[in-house]
Image (tube, rainbow, N blue to C red; front, side, top):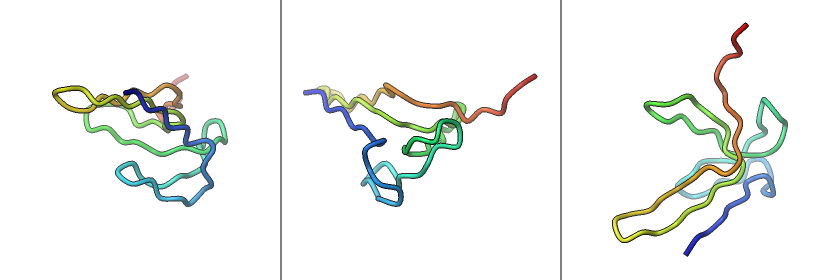
Length: 72
C-alpha cells in the first residue's frame, strides 16, 4: 500500500509524528518539513510517498526544495 502525504496542506506549526513540524519553505514559501539527512544536502519536503515493504518502509520525496547554498 502506498500512502502520499502532502505537507503543503497542513498549517504551520503542526507536529507530524516521526517527521517533524510544519514550517514555511524559505525557497518557495509553501509549507513543508525541513529534513537534514546525514549524508546528503538538507531539503524542505513538501510531498512524500511511503510504502511498507517486507523488509521495511520506503519513503520517497515527490516534491521538495533543496536547501543547498546557491553557487555563482
